[in-house]
Every structure is written in C-alpha cells, then in structure tokens.
Amino acid sequence: MTIATPLLSLEAFLALPETDVAWELIDGRAVRKMSPRFRHSRTQKRLLFLLETWGGDRGFVQPEWGIALRRQGKDWVPVPDLLYVSFNRLSEQWDENVPCPVPPELAIEIVSPGQSFGAIAEKATAYLNAGVLRVWVVDPQDRSITVFSLNTMPIVYRPGEIVTDPIFPELSLKIEDVF
Image (cartoon, rainbow, N blue to C red; front, side, top):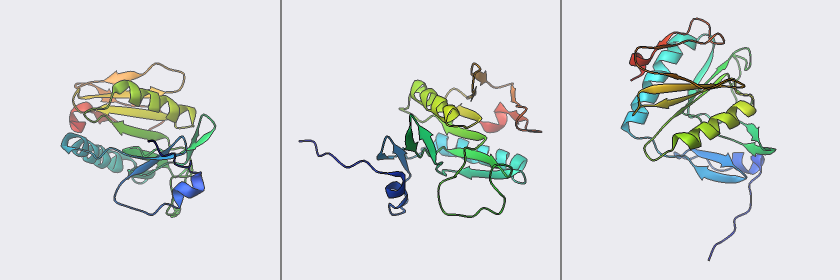
C-alpha cells in the first residue's frame, strides 16, 4: 500500500526543522541528498579551499547551501556541493538563514558512486535554465571537471589542463590541484 504525502510549498519546505541531513525540494517533495563518501568529501574540501582562496573577497563560496530556484514552473531548492555567488548578485552584508535567494554564478556537483553522469548533466541543464551561469560536474573517479554553460557544448577538463573562464576573472584552476 502506498501512502500519498501532500506536496510541499516552498514556504512549507523552508519551515521544516533543521537537521544534520541535507534535503532538496524537487517537484514539491523533500528529497534526502546522498551522504558524501571519502573521495567526494576530499574533492569538495579541496575545491572549497581553492575557490575560497580565489573568490573569498569577491563573493560567497559555500558548501551545501540550498538555492531557491524554479524548475519547470515549480519551486526547486537544489543543494549543490559548492556554490559561488558574487557580491554583485548578493550583497556582502547579506546574512539571512535561508536558501540562496538568487541564482549563483557557479554551482558545483560532485559525482558520487552510484550516481549517473547523465542524471547530473540533466540537473546541470536545469540549473542553467534557472539562471545559474556555470555548472561544474566534478568526477573524482575520472579525475575530470565538465563545465556546462547555456547555449554551448560542455567542456571537459582533465589532468594537465587548467580551468579558466571569463566570468571568473583571475581564476586558474589546475586539475591536478583538485584531485
């Protein structure tokens, strides 16, 4: 027997009690985010350090911070592994305990065992359609970063290559530094 649960509005989702578990709002339902394992966690830590060193005085570099977006006409609160939002988009003085209220310039998703690249690529497209400028899909197993941007083909960076992007001035990220 299946028990139907009511769909959550954005307000009801945000009113859920805060826990140690990360939840995403997807199609009106609270969906538990996968708990990271060692490679995922280590990669996230390295990226956080590298991005904070580059962008900490330019904007917020945050791990596991939900974003209040819209997907297919519905409220959507994904929780990327990391995000960067500049102080141009969100004031340096902003300090509310809610999901990021604006689409960030960058959302980063790290592939975990059991996740399909295709499903994460689909999520990357949804981020872009919701106003996020870049999405990085980071694959620790493959030691690669795939950069998604609207209206262009994804670019895959591998060891020996450097991630640069005109929307992130002075960012020069060696793939070997991430893995």
